[in-house]
Structure formats: structure tokens, C-alpha cells
Image 1 (cartoon, rainbow, N blue to C red):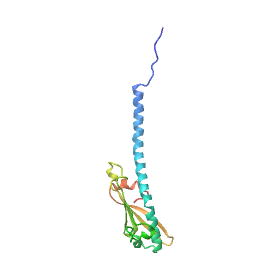
Image 2: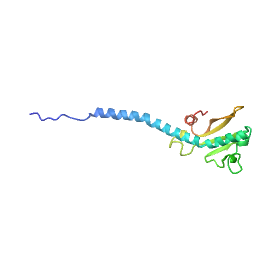
Image 3: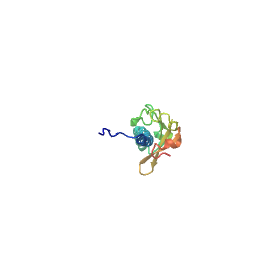
Image 4: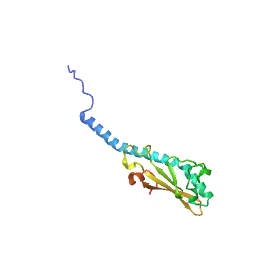
Length: 156
């Protein structure tokens, strides 16, 4: 009589190949996911200033496109107060109605010095005669310029 059972299971080589494939896929997926998360956080920060951009646009419309008439947002006596902007957390309005955005610990990736303290200006540009305002993100300082710029569309 033959009472031998057939062997079942995977060989060590087969298991090592599967682990290697999973490792390769993870090495591609994890950085892509981190980039996605950082871009999403920057998008959220940029969309948070949409109200300020709208207020600046209305102010420019009411003041014949004068950028200096719309460059003070804070306080009850600021240029943008009539448009509902009395405070702008983590954002500053500079001369020429430029909005300055800086990263904080919630935006840059932990341990990534290339993204630490990225600062961008959103500078308005008015197209004469059409009434349209474009906002150009301009890298100012902090982090590694090339890394900071990759997370904001149209940044220069």
C-alpha cells in the first residue's frame, strides 16, 4: 500500500518572489501617495484664500483697479473690511494686494526639509479693459524651491 500524501504549499523561492514584488509596488505607491496628500493640503490652503481673492477683486473693481487701495486686510479699518475680511489667519496681504501664503506643520511632510516653510505669494494681475484678475503663485522662500513649486500649479 502507498500511504504517501502529496505535499502542499509554496516553496521558499516562490514566497521570496511574492515579497519582492510587494516591496517594489510599495516603493512606487508610497511616494506617490505622499505627493498626493501634500498636493491636497496645498489645494486646501489655496482654496482657503478664495474669499480673500474675491474681496480683493471686488475692492479692485470698486477702486478702478488700484492695487494700493486694496492691500490692507486686517483690522476693522482695513481696505478689505467692507468686503467681509477683517482677519486672515496664516495669510498676509502685502503691498499691491499680494496674498502671502506660508506652510505650517499641517502642510509639509514630517521629516521632509525640502518642503519646510515654503512661502508663496499670490500676486494679482489685472487685464486692462476686460475686468479679469489673474492670480499668479510666485515662490518666495523656504524649503527647496523645486520641491515647493511642484505642489502649486502654475508656480514660478
